[in-house]
Amino acid sequence: MNEITTWLQTKTKDYDAGLLLYRNSAAAKSRTLSALERGKSARNLCVLIKELRTFSKSSRSAPVKKPELAPEIKKIINSANVQNEQEKQDLIHKSAATEFKRVRLGDLPKELRPKYKRLSDLWYQMCELKFAFNDLKPQNEKQALQIILNIEKLDEERDFIWKELDHWTKFKTLLPVKTEENFSELTPRDLYLKQANLENYIYKKNSRIETWKQDLKKCKSKPESVKLQEQINRTLKAIHEHEINLKKIEELM
Image (cartoon, rainbow, N blue to C red; front, side, top):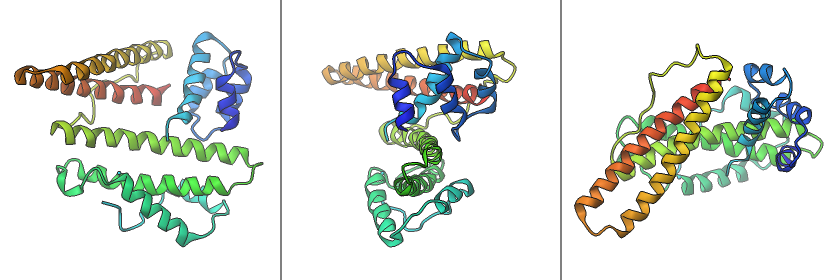
């Protein structure tokens, strides 16, 4: 993690060094890696920075049963020297109580209940990985990077589900779960341009939502307040659709 952080903070980024960090990571996508290995370019450097930056994102009644861990995560955990199993489980249960207290399963519609349960799996897996990371020896840099990127991948899925649950709690409507867009026939250049356009759209719409939220605080008319809430709701749904499309594009790049 320190190596990636240092690389990202360096003004003059060594492309080959960054490529090596990405190549050694468990999150490396074969298609993206193949494109990056063609050599340094303005586009490839931007893609490399974005891929390596994903690890640096900021790291809600409690589950009563520890779910089965994914096989690849079990492998990482079993190879690390994790001790004090009972103490570890107590800490996980305590942290889970805090993590899940905002929402109750019984208050959710049937469409969101499986996702709430999925959050339990994600939380346990992330906690287990964190314990495994803490037990690694300083020289196990490659394994540490693999654990970090696994945690980031799980955390991204966790954030996506919480966005759906929080939206239901506030607006009592569901966010879209899929889109009809198909990007499989686009060229790498067109994928990159589409990705940039979607990211720009999301940024602008999020800025617009922040303005509407400020207007909502000042609003004294109920009809106007309802109108602003509906605008925010519709725009959040549109943003979520674009984020789903972004994930599709990232899997192709």
